[in-house]
Amino acid sequence: MNDPIKLLFDEHDIITDATNTALELRKIIDKPEVYSEQVFQLISFFREYADKYHHHKEEEVLFPEMVKANELLESGVVQEMFENHEDFRELIREIEQLTKDNSLSNAQDKLEFYVNALIDHIAVENEEVFEIARTQFSEDELEKIYFRFLDIDLELGEKNKVALKERLAKIKSTLTA
Ligand SMILES: [Fe+2]
Ligand SMILES: [Fe+2]
Image (tube, rainbow, N blue to C red; front, top):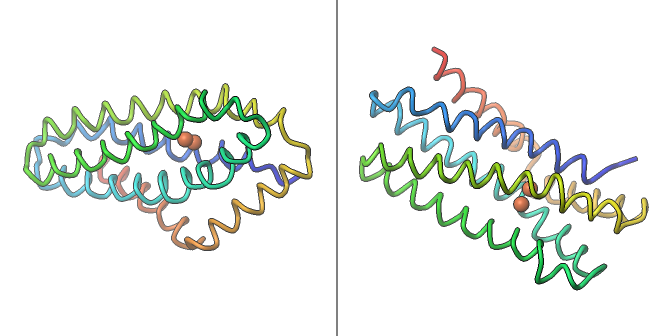
C-alpha cells in the first residue's frame, strides 16, 4: 500500500539527521568562516526540505483532512502543530540574522533551541498525531493523501529533494573532515 504516513516518517528521519548535524556545529564555532557557511547551508536545508517539502504536506493536506474528519482536532493538537511550524520559521529567521551579524555563539544557542523544539515536535507527530491519522482514514483515503503528497514533491521538484539530501551529507562531511 502507498502509505502517506510512512512517507512523513521517512522525512522525519532525514530532518532528525539534520538536527543532529546542527548540534555538532558547535565543534567548529572557533572557525567562524567555516561555521557561518555551514549554518547558512543548514538554514537553507531546513527552509527547503523541512519547511517546503515536509511541513507543507502536513499543513496543506494531512492536517486539513484530519480536521475535516474530526473538527475537535482543530483547536487541539493540530493547532499546536501549526503554531510550532510558525515558530520554527521565525526561529530560522533569527538564527540567520545572528549569523549575519557574526554573533555566532548566540546563533548556535538559538540553533540548538530550534532543533530541540523540532525534535519534540517530531516526537508528538510520530507518537500522537500520525497515530490519530492512521485510525481516522480508510486505506482508500490514505492512498489519496499519498498521491497528493507526491504532487507536492513533483511541484517542488523531486531532483531538488534528492539534492537537498546530498547537501546535508556534504555539511556532515565538512564536520568530520
Ligand atoms: Fe510538523
Ligand atoms: Fe512533521
